[in-house]
Amino acid sequence: MKLMGLMAKALQTEAKKVEEMMDDGMQSVRITYYPPCPRPELVVGITPHSDASGITILNQVNGVDGLKIVKDGAWLPLTFLPHALVVNVGDILEVFHHSLSLSPPPSPSSIHRFQ
Image: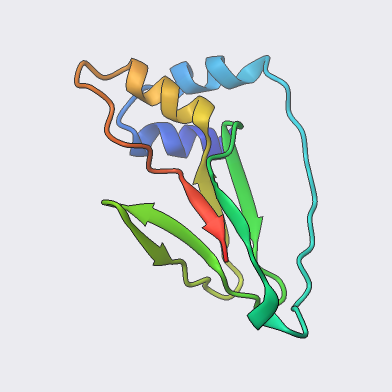
């Protein structure tokens, strides 16, 4: 909830609104480990997608690069910082944010892939 409050601040909305939206919702944890591939030239990757959750928290633990995000129609590689977490905005939070705005939503900013 602390993280959601900080995200509300970044979205320039009341923290209470975001906390109320997330308070009674389902919470889940999925732990996935992608070990370094011995033959990376054979890797196909994961197709472009967005996460259906409110947020996704990624912890880079093994130095495997490949996460990309789409911005302005171009795929950009994401460089991980040591000892840092990456927070992806999921569909639920994106829809909530757009519901607070009177302007039409831009193209999704949370589309990503692993390649």
